[in-house]
Length: 85
Image 1: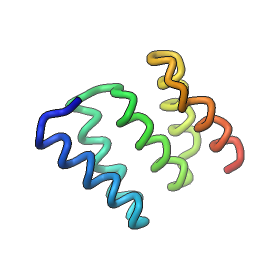
Image 2 (image 1 turned 135 degrees about the vertical axis):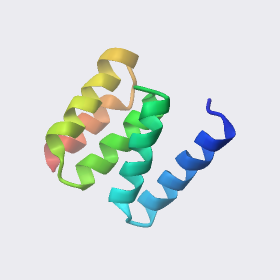
Image 3 (image 1 turned 180 degrees about the vertical axis):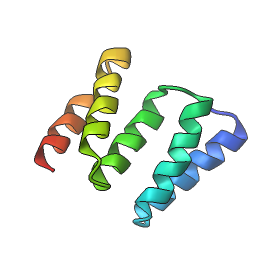
Image 4 (image 1 turned 90 degrees about the vertical axis):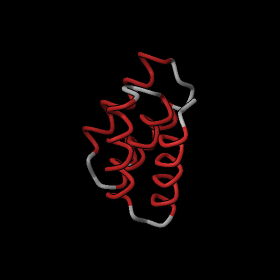
């Protein structure tokens, strides 16, 4: 999937999210998105972060990308979650 440096950043972003440090996790994921644009796992993480940060409009755009670009099965679940926020 990713090279070692990218894998490390991705793992750190996941841990930051779990620790409730959402803005920091999103910043890391945003960096990763520049290296791997529109990668479905990175998009998923960003949607979760943006939703938690109250940036619903941006999160919806990325969830839609997951659906249209990758036909990602996680997209409908995310879209439903965003509607409840």
